[in-house]
Amino acid sequence: MNELSRRLRGGEGACALTDRLNGLDHDARLAEVHGLSRRDLALLYEAAEGAPCDLDHFVPRELGPGRPVRHHGLNSLLAFRIFEKRFMRAETGEELLWGYNHQTLQPLTGPGYFVVDPPEQGREAEIDYLRVPSTRPACSWPPVAPNTGPISRLVYGGMRDRMRRVSEQVSVGRAFRGDQPMRAWFVLVRED
Image (spheres, rainbow, N blue to C red):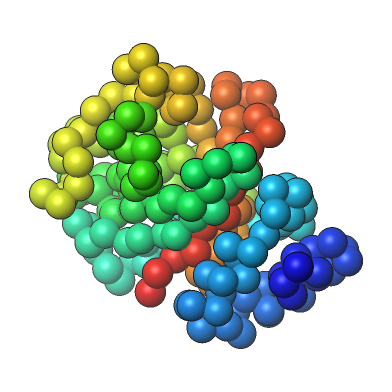
């Protein structure tokens, strides 16, 4: 059990967790996050209640449109726990983010494209798999595909991830189908 797990299971508050993660460099932060158990991810989501993410958390405003930002992830699935979400500001002039899931099962599941709209004040940002970018965001990204294929529909269909901020570079999410929460959590570490 690493330090972050110990603190989560000990019931430490969100501020202490934030301070711990903000005090680490990227590699150490990633190691702490990758050491979390499935139970720890649920605890982290609860600890971050009341701390919604905005678009700037995923892609800092100073980067502008068309600049991809990688977020290294760990999910609560039994297998294939390591993945990435890649985000960028839309190049259409709209205030929204485009993104996709970069992971080893991508040839089978599809890229899992999504859109993130600016959340209302005080609300959690939602990664929305019901919508996909209107155009291929970057030539290095896979072709845009809707999440309606036989397997991609099972993985991403009807899903939205509600995101909470943990620290400057770390966010935690929970998957929902419609308004129903799923027993699926994940954490993201932004690469700066």
